[in-house]
Picture 1 (cartoon, protein in one colour):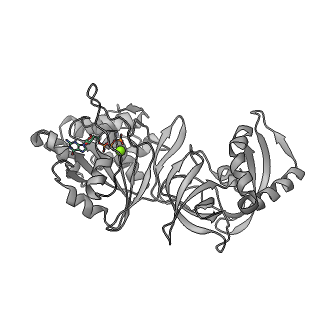
Picture 2: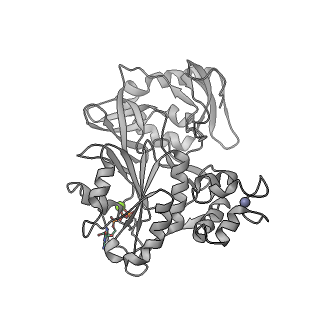
Length: 396
Ligand SMILES: Nc1nc2c(ncn2[C@@H]2O[C@H](COP(=O)(O)OP(=O)(O)OP(=O)(O)O)[C@@H](O)[C@H]2O)c(=O)[nH]1
Ligand SMILES: [Mg+2]
Ligand SMILES: [Zn+2]
């Protein structure tokens, strides 16, 4: 894809338009129904493109060039994250409506009109798939979009606004954005059933740090725990300045605090299956009625009851996204040298290492290792650092 041209200015841009034949048949029904309304300009461009030549690539998909009018987006945002789109297409402000993606179901998304609250079932303009970089999915729950209404409750997404605060992971070598446009993440763990996985908490903390999302750690099912056993773990995180809140949906403990933190913000709840993410939200907003299920008796694991991310508008202000339980969590797009910066407890020692390029894994004169050895730093946290640094995948 060409990224030539000045940043931020609207202009004609030539982009490679890759289209897989199988995709085309899957989308056919939709485009036929909405061709007149929504796809017309795109179809016109296609015939223009046909004239300018097309070729079949080695992989059997069509590769064409097409013109998109829009502006070039910077490759990276302020925190060094690569953007998910290279170009922001221009759309007519009169013909499109502002919306928020509340859930994604394959090729269709449910989009809430930002002003009226009406929900539309929307397909995605094909060119947006072309403009998307290495993501697994094009439209993400939490996206702010401009969409064209095709009927009372159907439409087509014409543009995805630049994202801020995305929580991502690696899924089969590609980027999987779990949620976007959030400023706060509740990392939910449970004291028991399933037992707590501190390594997953650490991974999510690094991800939040990198994305500029404020993390809050919830230790749910506190009614099942011996508080004394959990104190050391809670202490480790609290000492680093993270908010750690023990909660119980059963007794109501801690729920009021969570509610207060949710008010007026854009949040997400993430964590393993079965820890009680949906139950917590039901406890906070009793009319929600999110589906929940008991964890399996045999292996104490959750049953992956929530299957798709869902953005929920809260009655007391703000939004929260309920997400499916995380099975595996591998960080996306982080280089090993950067990992230490997101370990608040380890990074103060980094400058004291003998070698300036110390990796803190095996070197002599490593101040981080010394701090672990004499107990100034939790050795379990250091183990997490090594695991994340090596790009290891963890199964929950
Ligand atoms: N004892 C106890 N059980 C709880 C608590 N919170 C949730 N549970 C139970 O834990 C089970 C799983 O809860 P869910 O809300 O479905 O868990 P989830 O995190 O949404 O799981 P997925 O949707 O699969 O990711 C249910 O049987 C809940 O009743 C709690 O604070 N204490
Ligand atoms: Mg759930
Ligand atoms: Zn070191």
